[in-house]
Image (cartoon, rainbow, N blue to C red):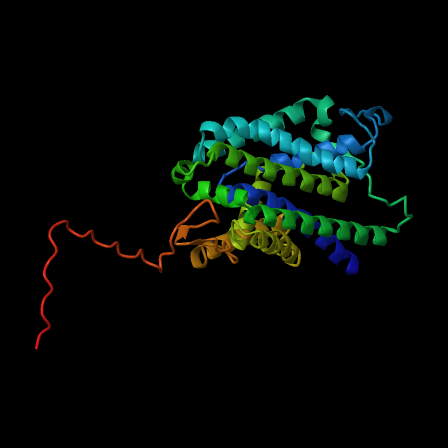
Length: 350
């Protein structure tokens, strides 16, 4: 039972970290990215080709690099690689596209990435993908399988806490407030000298870096990764987690992940088999997640943990914005005195 809880906890930490990256894009800056899981996949692939040995050591396997470097190199490389691809895609897509048009471009980018990865086998071994990723420090410290699972859970939880803290600092920073200003009213933010394009692009790259880091951890968790691991449903489930937990709230993203992507899948495993249909569990899971999203949108549209209040009717930030609170009306302006001769004093009545 303990091993099961540790395994579920590890998956929860990795998935929550990935959801935080999407929250940086959609929640913080309002970018509807329907191809977000592409960057998670890139993180897993890049980590794999950095940490795996050369492909020549395995029969009928082909992939680039094969540097066989330690985990830290793969982890950092995954974040940087996904961030650079995000920079390339965002530089084009965010310049003149908004809303639905931007979302369509992200879908197109995912289709292009999927086609290149699956059809060009020398890149990441095609449809077969990468496998045999190392389990960290398993041999170095002579850990038992149970001890390794506990160690990896602690590592993933620590990295989740670190990423959460960094994203909270970003959200509270002048940059974070400026990004939210662009999200709320791009024209008004631009009038105050904010470069909307650069702010959106930076938020997009931050989300890509976090996605790549999550993909790296996922690679070493399951020790393999192939194109079947990143269907469009994965991205939609992450959006479901944000809708349930609350967008633009990092704690809400974590809570929504635990409920939607961890608790529901585990509970559906307790459902008895329906006839000979072995796919009843995943099907019921998707139905329950859909019903949960509808219920949350109906009764609490902002999510279980809505965005933390940084606005009070109108946007206010330190130094850059100077909006008056709506419960404090503007003082009445003094009427100018009309020019002319002084009026004689009136005698007191009585």
